[in-house]
Image 1 (tube, rainbow over the protein chains, first blue to last red):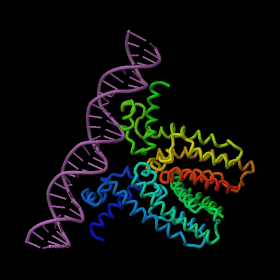
Image 2: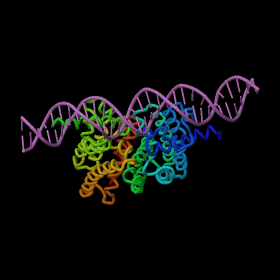
Image 3: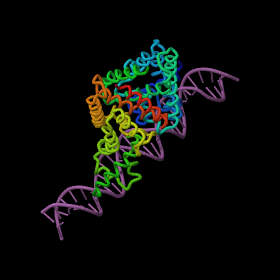
Image 4: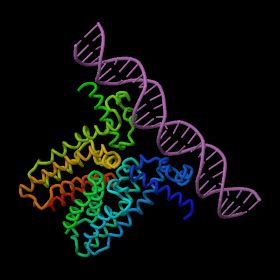
Length: 195
Length: 195
DNA sequence: ACATTATCATACTGATTAGTATGGTGCAAA
DNA sequence: TTTGCACCATACTAATCAGTATGATAATGT
């Protein structure tokens, strides 16, 4: 990795930390630079604006933070219920960078930015569509294997699972980590109700 | 209503509009005053700080915006599934002030403020606890009427329903109003799976 | 009628914001 | 060797922020 790439990465890494904890709008560029060795000149050399940096963050960092956990679970076992359970559980519990207090950066950004910035919304929508598609494929495999009735619409279930994830990430901010366990039990019951 | 009360109400009303659409931190006091006849002196006479105004907003306005829809549904019919379905549906569709694009103000505030402001978190938590309790009572009634097995923990189901609401409000910001219909079908299937 | 206080209005402050202007440095191609 | 550009550093700007200082006016009790 070249020196320039290292600078770019350092900016995105620090920006991710601050935006994850304080939100995009509340995170200033000065604050990002404060605790790094990067200067404002370097920042605006790599990103033509704060918005541009934010969009890069969605594509580069968030994707690399969440996507591995997802693909690791889907298709891992032959039982789609096991896989969908593990996927959400690992996203909630196993990921070392994400905490209950601050939730999920992708979910947070949708909340904050989707209504007020079209570019953010589009990038986040694309991200969600990829996740949805991956879950759909899992469900279709289950239907082809006879584990699940074809009466179920794969898209409906996929989006419902994502909806639950968004919901529990928000609830966790208020109720704390103990709710994750409560939620996972009821989530599992939901998965078992899919026949 | 006295003149002073009218001023206070006008501030809270305008603040609600702006915070609902842009978030708490992105809403400035100057912006609140801009399109009203209220001045900064009046603002700081009624609220000792922006934070104080925000806390008032949770207790006063949000509660009055959402709570009526909730109590109207719960206990309305003898079937708890019908009531829980109607509650969420009305929150999503029937409420005239809330839109799909901007979601639910209470959910939004949890996302933005719960991790970074203890007073907000506490006020929002109290709000959620009241909702949870109301749903729990609906579920206990159903169990006493023999509509639902007592194996189900009322708190678990109540929180799961709230979780779904939080989730769908976030998803709607990206997927648009059409998803509400898709969600409601799967939500109904979930309610029917409670036996 | 008078005093007191509630309710506001105006003008300010210092801090912070995103972004710019300008110049410097090192490396790569010519 | 020189030219040019990628990469970065420093110092600035105009706008905006929450909050304050100070005084005016209106309501209210005595």
